[in-house]
Amino acid sequence: MHEEAAQSAIDTFISAFNASDDSYVSALLSQALTSDVILWGPLGRSEGIEAVERFVLDIRRHPAGTGTMVRCSGVDMPGEWARYQWVFTTPDEGPRLAGTDVVHLRRNLIDQIVVFAGEIQPAP
Image (cartoon, one colour):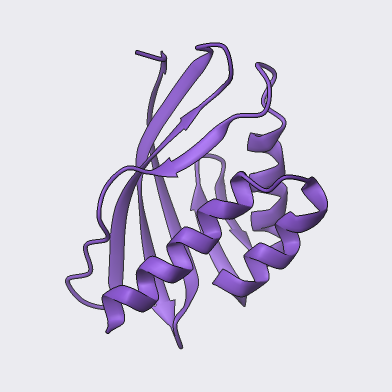
């Protein structure tokens, strides 16, 4: 049951990267994250949905164009932490970024996100 809740929260989080309009990002994140979420990202530690929203919007506004984020693995949840792999691809075979996120859930919502991004590569 916990893996299903984790997968739902993770997929909702990822859907924020792919929202049809920036105005939907906040609503999607509030369905997946606790209000006091902590993001451990490439630029350090930040707190709150607003900080995660800025992170998501920055990625959505990639200089190569609006990209697509997809979960490309199952959700592995050996305990309170879940992990999954993702890939972000920009249009026209622009830069591709892949990585693994580890998330912690509290009451079926993500309260911590640790982003492990890999190298940027051209799309295959």
